[in-house]
View (cartoon, rainbow, N blue to C red):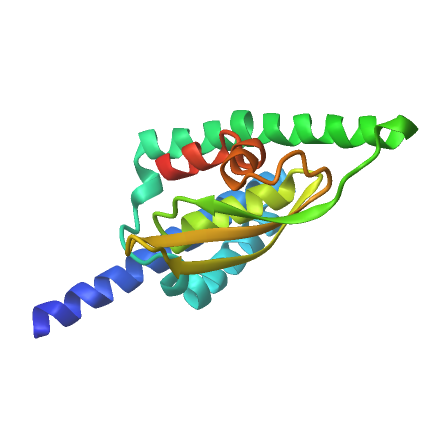
Length: 183
């Protein structure tokens, strides 16, 4: 019992430290300053955020992203995959704005997804919302006729090209879901 309590305390501390470290890195990247006041303020804010949210954000492996392979896969996803999907979607929306005859066909479609974790589902829904022309509205879980759990994302789509859920899912999710499963 005592070793389990020590392990739980160690996990809480690791979760707080990991969250604080990630927040501090984001702080430095956002401020882009080496002023000691900025660095100290960032450290204090990161520690406070880590104390309040660390145990909620980190459930399993606290040092998962400190593995260089996992970290670089995440950076590759942000810089290459997500950025390219956002640029493609922006280009499509910009064409629709400037060409009056292109029109839109708005609608809501239920798209199937392969969820590994709740974080992965939230990550995918947020990535879909970041791409212009789509907004993730809700998620739903159900049990199919074969007894398997099915997870759906309801998406408002600016131009519904197909009502086939599988095809629409491939068009909307693109490479995003594959890369999020890797992360």
